[in-house]
Structures are given as structure tokens and as C-alpha cells.
Picture 1 (tube, rainbow, N blue to C red):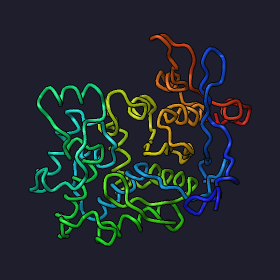
Picture 2: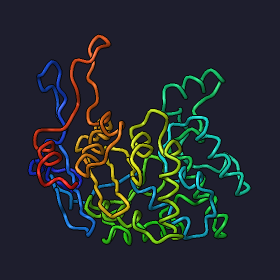
Picture 3: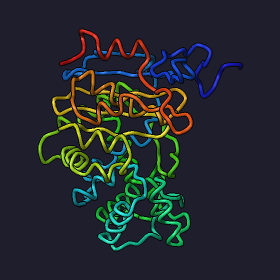
Picture 4: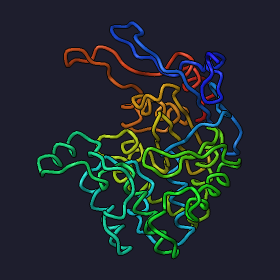
Length: 338
């Protein structure tokens, strides 16, 4: 039927505009989406769009996946856990850490089943090409997760050649963990871009899961992963990524982005946030996370920097991508959480 896609009536989905891009003061384009902010008790404080509709949370689930790996016996060091939860840019530190994870399990790059890829950042890509590099599995942004999955299988005595299959014991454990942290059943499972399973939950469930990670008991798998992400922000993203800048600049922040413009975050007291842009535009992730942090009155140079993304013309700034009027009112209004 017209307007139908994947079981969703697209004609009836009119999520609000969260971000607008202006050029010379004229709105040139905009991004609709859904967003939810929960208080420390899990109650909804701010809601836009359809936060209870299931979405594939993509790599925003990686901290949950990493916690499940620790539960299964993965003994990784802190920087290894951070890379297990990462969508990295394939910089030297990322490749070195992924190799170290494999080596610790007696494996090499040949065991990885993520697709070959170029490094994500331009600088790392140029360096890789100058060294004669071709697309490689170790450069894939999910190579840390895949390396940790393999190491987990070794630790648990599970088959390594089939670790990506949804029926593999590791993937069953991960799916159960996602549902448990989210407080709701996984709505659907598909295959992610890296070849591992991708799970659908609501944005409300995603925010709730990040609150659970941030408030986890000391020594638990969730607490180990959360502290690893906080302590090793460069491993989680890359030198020029907003997720890395904000993790490094905001004390106690736990955050993770995912493909198709999904992002989630939480603070140690359990306040949490999740959002998704309908068009999947990654350029909006920084301003979305900055919106949540500004609502929580978190300070820092990176929070100010990522409130907007420059729109350029002729090499000069001529506009910006930033919050819509409605989102700005919610973020800066009298009810924002101080």
C-alpha cells in the first residue's frame, strides 16, 4: 500500500522537527525525529515524536553487548572493553587494540567476520593508503566488538567460526541482556552492517538501559563497561568524533551513538536520554547529545561546541545545523533539569 514501509504507515508518522540547518538565516533543511529524556527514577521528563516505537538501536547497543560478554567470561582490560563498545575510526590505536584483543585469545585478524573497510577518519584513511593498505577487517568500525566476541567465545568454550549467527550462544545471551536492561522484550532481530545481530527496542527502553548501566553496582559487568567507556573516550569513537569529545569533557557521562542517527546517554544518578533522526543523518548526533547535556545543565567546551554544526560556503561559516525552536524551548525552558 502507498505510504507503507516495514509495517509503518509513513503517511501517519509526522515526528517533529528536532534540528534545522540554516544558510544566511534561511532554513535550508531539517531533520525530524524522536527523543526522550528520563529523570533519575525513569519517568519521562521530555518527549518528542514516537519514543515508544521500536527502532534498531544499532551500535548504541554496544555497551550492553559488551556487558553481556563480560557476563559470559570475557576478561578484557579496560581499554579492550572500551573498544568492544566502540564504533571507532580505524585509527592506529583502534587497530592496535583490536589486534591485542585477538592476540589475548590466541587469534589473529583472519578470525574476524566483519566486512573489510577503510578507516573511518580521513587522516587515518590517508595514512593507511600511504602505507599500501587496502580495505581490511581490522579497520572496520566494529572490529573491536567482533574481536571481543571472538575472545568471549574462547573464554566460554564456544565455537568461534559461527559467532555472528543469531542462534549462537553468545548472541542469544546478548539478546537476552538487551531485553533485560531495556525492561522490555526485543521487538525484532535483524543483521547489522557488520554482520552481527541488530536488535530493535524503543528509544524509551534504550534510555532505560543506559540508566541501568550508569547505576550498576560496583564490580558488575555493566559497571566495568561503563567505567571503561568513560575512561577511554578515544577508543569509543575517534580523535574528531563528538562522542569522544563529550565523553572526555563531561564527568560521569556514558554515551554511545549508532548508525542511522541513533544516540543514547546517561549520567551516574540515572538520568538518561535516547534519540533518533528519521532520515538517519549522522551530522545531527552531536547537537542531539548536546541538547540532552544542556538540559541537564552539564558544562564544558565540548557541550558548547556541539550545540551547533557549522554550515559552510566558500570555506567560511555561513549558517549552522542546530536545535529547532521546539527543542530549544524544551532544553532551555524553566523546567530543564538543573
